[in-house]
Image (cartoon, rainbow, N blue to C red; front, side, top):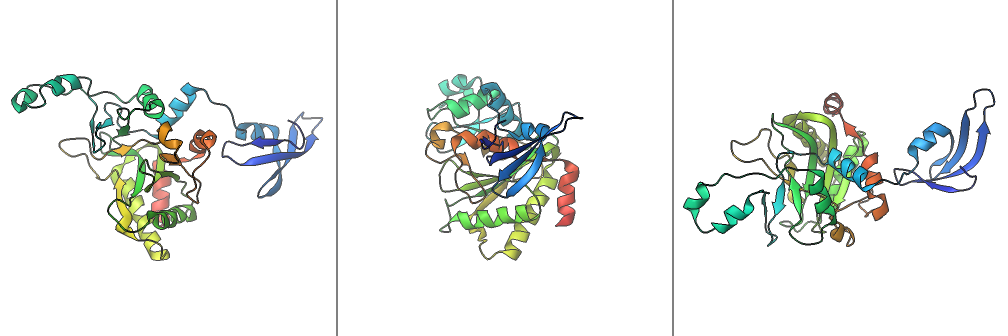
Length: 297
């Protein structure tokens, strides 16, 4: 570590090392570092843990899979005409060949493509319209590993930015870390909350409802006409189907246009080189922590 050198942290912040303290008996090394918030002393081990590390492709895919975790036995694929999604099939060609024959279709059995890190790689890297995917967050057992607020301008004259920021402010007020995203449309926003374990969808949705109620009570900027839904949108799996899907972020061709991209807390797009650092720095909550938030609200 060199004095007066700028270092990048995993959370995207920068620090400068101002002074080094050597403890001759314990061999410990401390640093006086300067940040935007001020100066403070940190141990060499603590600083090393926070320094930005270059991730391999495999590490990025594993990180993405850990956070954007839905059902692993199926995922959603966007239609080539861009108007909807349906479960991805390994035997899609069989169905395509009899697309105009309903009797023949009923004789076929759907075989679903599993959600893997190859799916994630294709979602991010492929540039054609065919490789656009989503996940089904509602797991077997009526549980989920994430909660998403979807603020959408499609059917509302209201700019969803103010409402998104107000809900994000409520989360920050109660110490709940969110990952904001500008969706692939470029005019809508997602707020992602992640869990370190599967929790009941009803519990996750209760937390979401309380956040919305608190936001409406404390901000004049909340206009729920632009609120599309929470995902999962159900407490329990329907008898047929997989529940609502949510489109995956970081389609790289969109990221270049500031869409499908993570943002800071002012909803400004992050630089592409910081996207995985921002994801890794986002906290995931246990079931007990979620209940502590609910009781606090």
